Image (cartoon, rainbow, N blue to C red; front, side, top):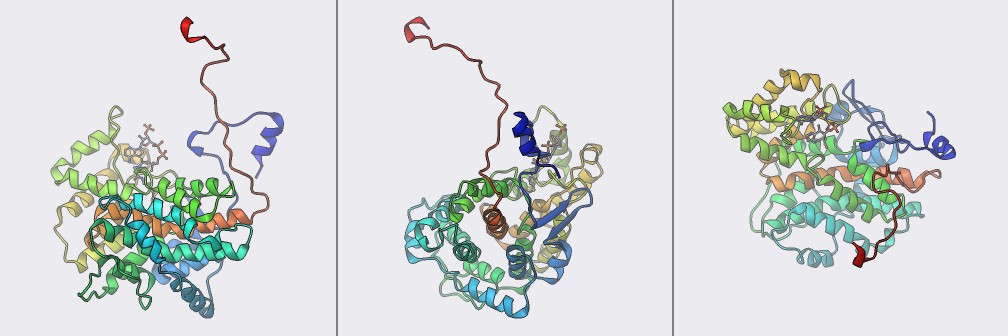
Length: 402
Ligand code: ACO
């Protein structure tokens, strides 16, 4: 590996690489992707094994600390996380300042950014202990904040965390429990939610993670950095794709309209893209999509959803696209977002909650990457160069002469 940056800086030249398609901006030991093989490893462990045998909170420990925990370490970690699931009562007041019809992502960007105003005792990025406390706080509080954003958007009272439940089950409880009614978390739904969280936990230097690192490279506090990541994730080309995908499937509506949308996706003059298809790195298949598809089948079976028109459109669209020369030649396969929206819809989440659920799941990845960067003594402030295409030097003309 050559540090091209150093060499080029000495020679006073730079590379032009829009979208950073072939430029590594950091070293990282957290997540490995082989796009050609369709392989995803967290700290060396294949995602398929973790999805089948582990659970989200264990994966959080692994991503944060580099190794799988022992039994005692897991108990301690779980205890530390559950200790922080509540948010300060003043944050409830802060929530109430938002319009009630705000998109939950808008609320989350604001509330997570504002955590730096509420938790002063974990802002010192030079103190490793404070960095760890900030990480635990965010992993613990993001589900609470996402659930509060949801409850607020539907005009229901906030539901406090129930720490006797597991991480995913607690999130479902905070979203779906209502006062004076019993809510029992279904174990199949809880497992499916845990899997969604696991599959989204980290994905190396994607747009939002790079945003977190770039923000963090200036020494900004961790809450501000994660808020920046959430803002970036919101876009439809990234985390917003799960919402956009389900909306697209609904717009297509019936199987007979699929050819029209396939034709639009191929038309160079039409900006339309098939949402949930394609990936910058995976050019064979997205291993997360395979696991997610299994979960979709389990959840739909449980909910007794067999002839749902959206699901029929999704299955047929996938079949047609996978046999189509355009999609084959451009290596466009369904990505994780193609199936996650179908599961979340079946669970009862509105589309506006899809990206917040992605955000709370990715928080552990963002904060692990941020910690790795801060602990690296060679890290520098991120400062891309540009290829200037504006006017050359020219002299100012007074307004009377223009
Ligand atoms: N539908 C139709 N054509 C597509 C699609 C699509 N979904 N994705 C890419 N293409 C085409 C492009 O038009 C382009 O064609 P060209 O070579 O003739 O110009 C070619 O495939 C390459 O596309 P790029 O945009 O250059 O690929 P890039 O790696 O930059 O984009 C991205 C990847 C953003 C994911 C893209 O495939 C896309 O927009 N997909 C739809 C949105 C989506 O599902 N995003 C979720 C990504 S996964 C995640 O964030 C968890």
